[in-house]
Image 1 (cartoon, helix red, strand yellow):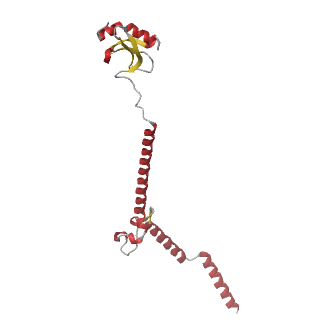
Image 2: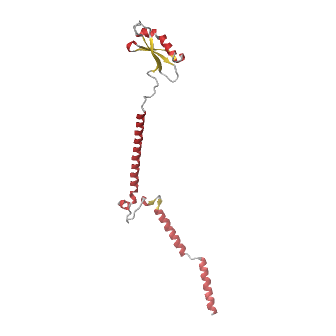
Image 3: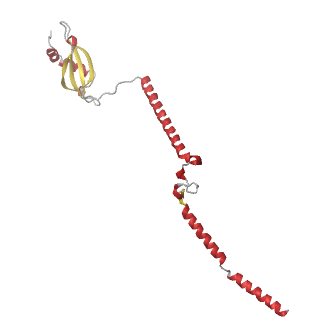
Length: 200
């Protein structure tokens, strides 16, 4: 009977490889990668894996020897190593659904807070629409309200007033200037009146 794990591992190497070749092609099994002594005298022999898609994994064959019987293969499996790529832990659907709903509720609450903030901002902007809300600084000396320091919607009111005054002045000058056509007509009428008086 084999008494130590080292002896058992050395004696069962070929047995472990034969068991592996029953479940996977020989091309997927690499060289020996050591062994691990388990409880109850079980030894797990490791072999490097050459199967695509499983980097860092090892073929593992667990063998044991009971009493005076020959060593026996207990299990053959592909096991991850310390640097293996592993899938994330499985999470039940009910838990994932609960997390999703909680996240959606959180987003909805954030959206409601942003809408409320926007409404408050709109209310502040519209506060000046009521004359009662205007401060004394918002009025000129004569009590008339002014906006934008003399500008209304980007238009310079003072400039418009100056243009209007220039137009009025030019209209007045035009009214004062005599019309040449009207002067000629007046001269003709006076001439006819004088001719009538002479005939009389």
